[in-house]
Image (cartoon, rainbow over all chains, first blue to last red; front, side, top):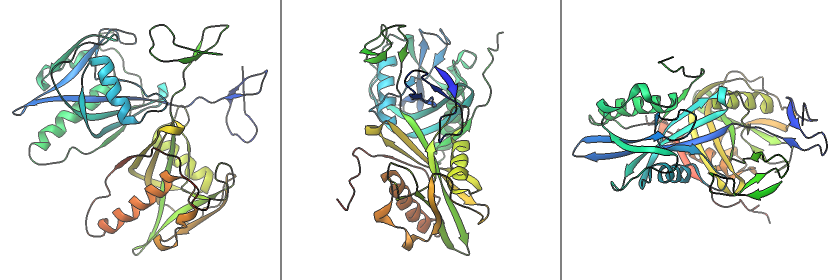
Length: 181
Length: 181
């Protein structure tokens, strides 16, 4: 595999030295949900504690790489079922977060938990509902998750006064440092 | 290259029979803009006539594959400059359209043309401003572009009565047939 600029292109690509096939590398989409359980205004969000690297042991919203042949909404529901064993009713797309230094775009949908029969999937150590004051902010796995949760609880407070949740985009330019290092 | 399910995975992947490396294939993002020139309420949109396949000779909004190391907004501005020679002020993200049968997600940003010094890039035959009644609806290259344009002009009419443009998501399940076939 060689790194060179193919004809009719304007940047270096990985090209097979034998067959000439160009292996384009493009950003990947990571898609998840904010699964919400609301009982008479007591709003809780479902988080998963990661059983895999990176960020083993840290908390995240259920999310993962989008697959071919599926839509962004289907990816969100699939990842929520795989990682949290949770069935959801998908609500509108809520955040789109660019993470250019890792070649990723993260999307999170708001979602309504359909029942409390969730359980940790193979990639999760445990799965748990959190009220806003219980969120383990120092143990959130990824900045896209903490930004999405902060936006969600800020909008939730406004929503109670009649405002819509809206849709948010954000660019995250630098890798997160572990605050304990 | 063999198609098999790697350990700890749940679907077939392309795996190199020699070295065992898994070549994951994920959806690609196609990002573009709706470049608008507005003169006292006379609103025109910039379209490019394609000089490349697929859909050579058909009209499109400037758009292309997102690259590593860039954000979705940067991709929209870059493609608009490359294909239409147009400088824009980026406005909020306007549409997200899933096209699962071709493993793509298309995003379009609203945008304000900064000047009229646009010109066809290497992938365009010509670049031209269109008022709504001039849009060549039967010669639009891709359904994601025609859906985005229709949403835009519908929202534009509402916008003149004080409504916001909003953000739209749409799933396009089937390939578009050429209406002339």
